[in-house]
Length: 361
Image: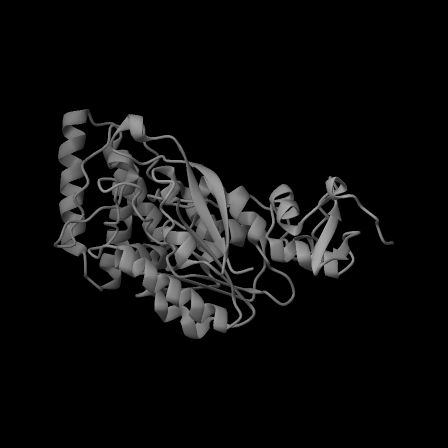
């Protein structure tokens, strides 16, 4: 049925995308498939204003049966737990898009959200942080041994007073640094337990290393930290059984990607100010030039016809004239979303900011 609409009676694909929380490309596909009563005017779709978003049958068909959802077992700077509702609007999984790749997995908030919701053919995660990936490997392969150690640490640490806790914490931190780079499997279990222990008890849950690659975050002031979340670790281990785990440069995932793949990339964010940078998850910084290299990598993924979503900070939080990402991703769709900055050494610097979701679809 064709609609004869005055300008105020219809909306563009861009307006519909904003209202429905999807990409412009998805809106155009819905129009072309006849799922929206839209008309064509001058090569553009005109959609009845206030028309409701069609139910997306793709996710309904491929959702898993409802089970207790798993959650990240580590707190990670820049974690995406608070943005899952926005990021989830981009999930494209259907009969054709049935592979997922995350080249910089970090704490894995998006990974576990995907694993909670979908049965996929292939999932690959990667990170350059060897200690992080070693911990994922132990959770996957030796979770019961890991839980035994974590329970021991919890029973020993929680009853102590603050002076005794600091001594205990620093001893564990020193032991962790002794094990960094140690590839013996038995030591990997201990190192993974220490990494989780430090993550649950250190200041703000940060993972930061010095120039020698040694973990150097001081103890936090938590009264009763949950060091061993046994049920979640067991559930995470089960979810990871079919996940491929790689450690190395993000470019190494390229050969795994094809036109059936959704790739989510969450790099160390570009600092909003000269003093706000925090990229020390590993010894290597992530500067503007590396963001440019990442944009070139996204172009390579485009050539493979993969669907790609990239997160980053919005420079316009502090400088309306800063068009770094608009210029870098001029051919992509950029959406601004609101986030809460949870990790900052200054309490008054924590608050709501805009972040970017950059998609090629």
